[in-house]
Length: 453
Ligand code: TRP
Image (cartoon, rainbow, N blue to C red; front, side):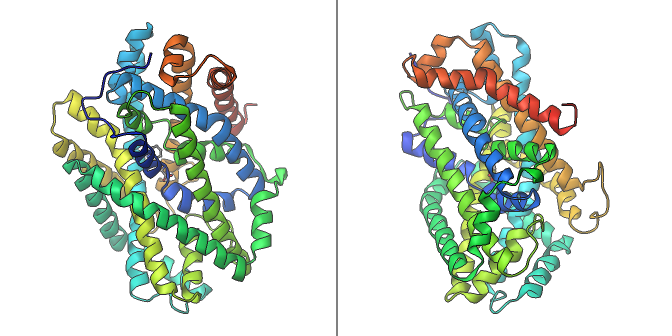
């Protein structure tokens, strides 16, 4: 039997509300900003293949496990882990998994907000007509001018963080989610339009070859780690965000089904973004490995040349901002529920406090693109270190522990009951994947990336 209890924080009106919120969390900068640039940096096809395999064999099974935990625990990740560990006879230490998630979410938010600020800045630029007739040198100058100026970055970062905190503090998430339910399909349409433009004007054939013909000689231990880390990042896994959304999920909704919908939507958006961007990269002679500025240095070229591009450009960056916004609220949510439950803080105080500290830490990311661009630790800037630590270490570690807990500590009947599945082939495949495959793959990829195996 699935649990009948409901969370003290409320419950989704139904399956659709959950799918919307979870897709809102999953689809964000990770799909449109990050996926193309890390694909470019890691050599294309082979990287994309590893990423897709990670989504299928690690991400989807762990997402099911994380939703399952949330729905059974019905509390903040930390208290959910403590409660379920007690139920299953596991140790008290499991609650620290929840704490790690709170910290990871907060660290990610600090840099996520800075990049979302770039999208805000580009709404303004697009509206001012800055893309009209722009050329390759122009886009580079536009982007360089923005990220080189820490005061402007700080201003946009501040605005985005305030937007996030306001929504979380006022508990008006439903409002944003309703907006996102209209804007996401629109974002999808614009992406399709951009792919159409890329087919007509860009070097589409070369882009397809780059993205889908694997050249395994380009694959390093680190790029496999980046592909795996990104599969967690893009699905919002491993830190409790999806666990919380699961805690609001009504009983009797099929966890497997909602997981598939979210994972497919997320993957399609990422691939479309790649197919919109790389044809322009190749036809304009840009650098596929240009790094975090990639979409900001390619898409304005398309907007500058296509008919109606000025309006489409504004719309695109507005949608991108909304996609980032609905992701950011899920990054802050674990910390906020934790403060509300354990420190008897109000939602508003918790949101403002968390947002403020994340904003402060975000200044490190702001400076990584200008004043501190030459300051490195382990060969990486402050931003790159934060991204590496959270995406490639904390999230996979969180996912590993989630799969171990669900597959090795929880009772099998509870899993069957929560998933509402018969003990058939699908359940057994899932159980095998989270019991053996996912944990082993994460460990092997970790060890391989540091050169141990
Ligand atoms: N998935 C989002 C994106 O791709 C980012 C995100 C939101 C996230 N919530 C998360 C990443 C939780 C990791 C964990 O942009």
